[in-house]
Amino acid sequence: MEYVRLGKSNLMISRVAMGAMSLSKIGDEESAVALVRTAYQQGINFFDTSRNCEGCEKLLGDAVGDIRASVVLASKTNGQSGAEILSDLETSLAVMHTDYIDLYQYETDCFLPEKDSPDGIYNAFLRMKETGKIKAIGLATQELDIAEKAIYSGLYDTIQFPLSMLSADASIALVKLCEENDVGFVAMQPLCGGLVENIPLAFGFLHQYENVIPLWGVQTNEELEQILYFNEHPPVVDEKFHEDVERIRMFFN
Image (cartoon, rainbow, N blue to C red):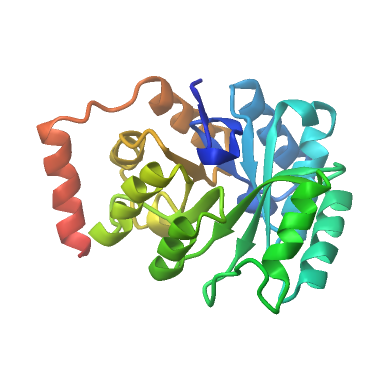
């Protein structure tokens, strides 16, 4: 497994990351916890969840309790005030059995929290970082303009944004923008919500960008093994690869 620095957060994470939002769909707690442990044993150390999915936070916390120092945990909040943000964090810490979260992200498709704004949201993140309850500040959004503003603002260590082989050119351009500004890029929806069924092409497309960390929402050991296989044997990105990708992109676009 290869480990890379996640932007200016300085967090060292596996290039294969697990989106823990899918854990609640597995069916039983024992299987969900076992899947996370298998992922960890295979070298995955970066796990992402959200306060909006309390069951997922709990399952993840239960799974990594005794290996907490060896994993990088990310969660999110969409609280509408500084007080709500602080309350959400305390709840997440309790549910996940930890005293800090490595990457705490603000989840929004409406506006970009800024320093000293009246809502107090960004300043709440700063206070949490100053007290050691979070290590890095991120933004999660599906809106291109908000993502761009976050990158240029210099306020965020990472962005989480939808990225797949079906993404528009403007979305793909965010990859280079993040690289130029040392902002970590966490890619949600690497299979575009299930539209992409060709896993080798999907994996290879994202793997070619060294600063992009896809979140794979695996729900079975078979799905996990497939992703790990392509991590060890990434598809060759050659002319035929690009032709195959472009053919699929044209079909959907």
